[in-house]
Length: 234
Image (cartoon, rainbow, N blue to C red):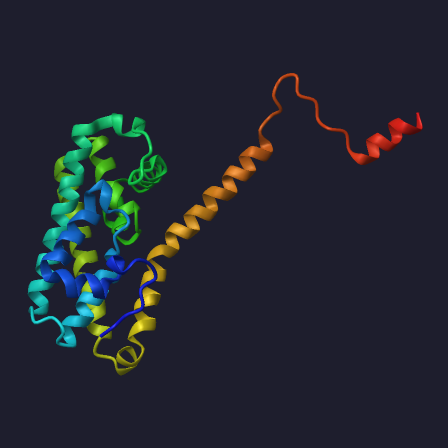
């Protein structure tokens, strides 16, 4: 089976699965769940494709075993992110931007965590980028460890098992078989849609803030054309 990638081939779920197999799937799930460098990985589309490939006999690992291992990898990834956040602490908010780290991603995850509290660990699982940074923010905030474990397990199972089973369920539908490329492209688009929406919202807020910013002391606004004409008549 071939799929249409929207970016580099190494971000195409089908390519990743065919190249690295089950170990690659688990490594990507782990990295995207809590490592700073994993935010760009195709978690949702990867899980969906994994479930689809199992029911179409492209992967010979039993579905129940794959779901179990994916859930464990997701939980372990969040655990790693939480411990990293506790170790780094507030210094994370002062870390300079780099190729694989943007301070705005930390700020978005922090706002998400502040808004939804502990249940953000469950909700963030379904929001690309935010799901990578939320467990780290939980660690920085020194969230109660027992609560963290509880919500981490719930989120890991709902996301890891849920999206994989969705791919497996739809993989049995003839329409999906006949339109596999379009289906996978749609999953990828849905994965990045929240990022696009958030970017547009942030851009709109920045423009409004710039427009509402007071003028610097000593600055005088430029006269309008009508004002210049009235001044010339005088």
